[in-house]
Length: 392
Ligand code: SDX
Image (cartoon, rainbow, N blue to C red; front, top):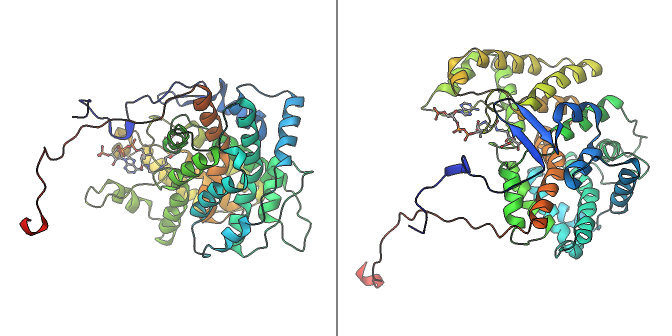
């Protein structure tokens, strides 16, 4: 039987590692990064501070944060040959596939990021990817929109720079809108880490073979792409749009979700760990109200989403299965109000999750974790002899 007697599909009851980074309590809806509650961090911290906290374990002093940011800025360029790889993709390519490819391709231009054994070598690889990844994100979006690829400005804050790289039109001075800066900053913080979810476990297991950081992150991006994981934020908007086109008939979609014959998932609902509510969904739902209000945007999709949530909370199929809105349910409504294309929603999730993936990869390497190699229960043929093709 390959040495084991029971298997645990989806690792629902398996602990893969010890970690000091993120704490979840699924029953109580608690999420903490290095002991700080997500509610406090979303309210009081900024994304770069939270990235530092996740990776190094403490909130940075002003001096530490300034040095971290200036080291990142030193690497906020990518080799121009990356554009040739980007050009090779058809416009129809999904941005997550482009981003995963470009992230892995970065290794070719940063060979020092592969064999990293010392903390200093790890630090250099970390500030490199934190500087280059937002450029890849912005260029992936601009390529899809047919806009020229450019850089932001090193005088800007980390999130301001991302917005400028994404949205600056060639002929204009991009005006920073504090509503958008605060909204994006908060969304990135809320997505920054989530213990051993599918994509983080992927980063850890790829990294456990001592493949480089960029290759491990590229694998994590591919795992996040799936509609059962980060890809859900795009699937939620497509579902809400379909309901709107269908005259807002939420009851019909609730019925479809319960139809065992045609297993339609109510995207943005349910979670492996949270069995009462996802604390991030609560914060994002309120932020959606605030941001759309501040922007003066009326979006019927938000009302449809709230209607769906209300009905699910009163429907015993969902209550019995403890299905509540998760982080992906409301986030797309804010991205849409920021004029981010729906195919880019999961890329924005990856942008937020980057520091968490980095923190988990670094912890795995510093803990000298062994290469990930699970066993199996064998259910195949017993020994049999080869037959020539004329005997088959
Ligand atoms: C993320 O792990 C993380 O932390 C992930 C994440 C992170 O920050 O990294 O939080 C981000 O991925 C959030 C989840 C985004 N995915 C979706 O919104 C897709 C829709 N949700 C589901 O596919 C599902 O709920 C999962 C994948 C989130 C969780 O799946 P599980 O824990 O494997 O649960 P399951 O599929 O075994 O479902 C249990 C029951 C089943 O019914 P029965 O077979 O018992 O009759 O609940 C049903 C499922 O059919 N069910 C749903 C449902 N989710 C579960 N029914 C309708 N709609 C849904 N969304």
